[in-house]
Image: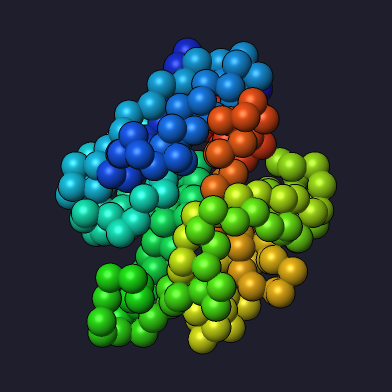
Amino acid sequence: MEMSPVKDTLRIALVGDYSPEIVAHQAIPLAIDDAAAVLELMADYDWLTTADISSSEDLVGYDAIWVVPGSPYKHPEGALIAIRYARENSIPFLGTCGGFQHAIIEYARNVLGWSDAAHAETDTEGRMVIAPLACSLVEKTDDIELRANTLIAKAYGQDIISEGYHCNYGVSQAFAVELERGDLRVTGWDEAGDIRAIELVTHPFYVGTLFQHERGALVGKPVPLVQAMLRAARE
């Protein structure tokens, strides 16, 4: 049985509206470079603004897609197109903060049939699957309990982690109940039981986190989920 050839250089699409002021955007290139070095592979990345993406054709050729923090996005539809493309084509996907929120919206609309699924930060009508958090998580750090034997738990190698946030919105209570019925599973909770991470169990690598794990790269910490994404992209 022949092994598939290993690609010389992985191509990563970073979907979001880049700003040097956003801490997570400062961290993301460091996280990718560090993960690539650990895995002894080459990884290039392109920043794609949400306005750059008008169809799935704009994403062809990428080995992984990361929808990054920085919402409200200038063109939310671009982020949703990228998420759907990754989901439907088994492209390794990572969504952090705004990327996590929009992964929830995309799944609600295109898999569960909630065509009016909405984000309370930007929408005034529809069913709010993303709603204001009871307590702001802007520049907060918190513990997260991970579901055992999941992609995220295997990446971290432990069941309790501590990560930082920069957000005011999360999964609404009304929609949290719906996530018990499909293939998008909750795989991380905070101490109050609120949703902090999700995975699509029918996909080789599809992980979303409300927390910004990439920030660890700014202080020289390894970023396990970025390593896991690159490993999945290589395979």
